Length: 258
Image (cartoon, rainbow, N blue to C red; front, side):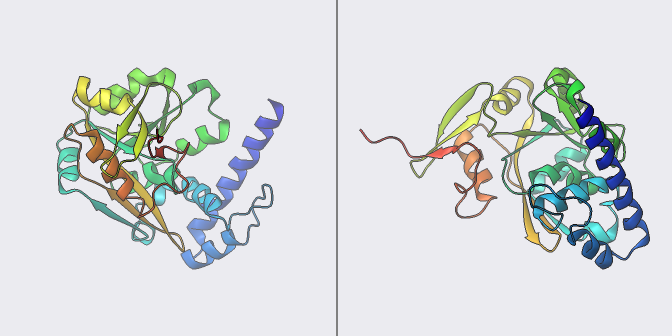
């Protein structure tokens, strides 16, 4: 516990330094300094790696709506999404643990959508450095992550017009096998589908692609109209031609031959 507090304190100091540098340095110089890996090292990795870049962008997430940052994330969304969000309809975006998924919520907020995700675990387990970082986000009055013991509050937030984020490839909870048109099956969490059926939440597939050089493409597909196969295939299509690669838990599989 003591080491966790020390580590959180170090990360908070690093985050403050990054925020200060981002304010006073041109974007190109800020990127160069971060890519030197001079802030932190973990098992041989540095901030030059994609995951470290993601952490940097989280630390300055309340500035991502500024033009110099926002132009680095292109948003492609189904025409109905912005209209539904503007009307305050309850929306849940479903995604996979693939690519820089940690940044989906931050880039959605940068584009003006009040998005929040639901995480496994309990709220009391949230590290101090994450509490500090979450106070600095755009729309700080709405939490970035909600935890399982805050499920009722998360659902209330979505019901009042917020945009919720739920992963389809989590390993706990109720699961279902969805047969795809190419003969493969996809093992998905049933939670989002139950919300659509029981609460009338509108589901959209969502994915974030890293294009390199600190640029991203945020994609939101067509809404779910009751056919889980169509939703899954739309979601997988957001991740390229070979979505089976690196998808958490080998979710895609062909039926066993008999």
